[in-house]
Image (cartoon, rainbow, N blue to C red; front, side):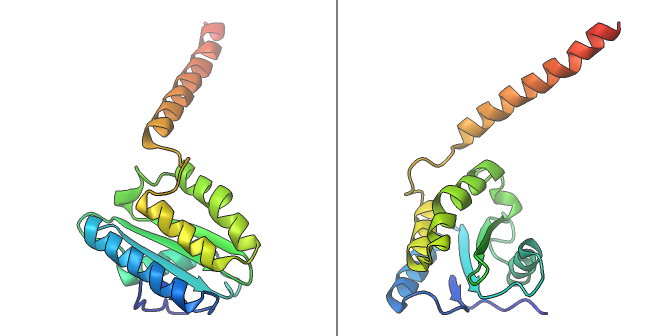
Length: 167
């Protein structure tokens, strides 16, 4: 299966979005790209056909060159609508700001409840809010750094304690 060539910022193969929301969100993501150079794309399709969502997303991401080539600052929200599966794929240049903690929070706390309820319009609008920084309570880079710093200290402490006992 060849990855599709995307023509828009919002690609609704499943035909689940209202026309007005499709136009609104496509325009919002286009404007965000123009203002920030961060290219965010949505791809809604019915079935994975037995494939992993990550594999499909990476193929679409790479084949379409999502993001700027020199900064690799693309974002892809991929959704298998009939299976209620979704994933965020980030370019390497976005991994610090759009880290695992932030992406997991967005998927589990914001997007998945809307997807499970069949509220596709609201889900895509909420995604745009996240991309534009309009969504409240998203984990910040600082909280993640603090969290990682604590985890590293804990791991180091646990690692040194057994060494102290052996000596």
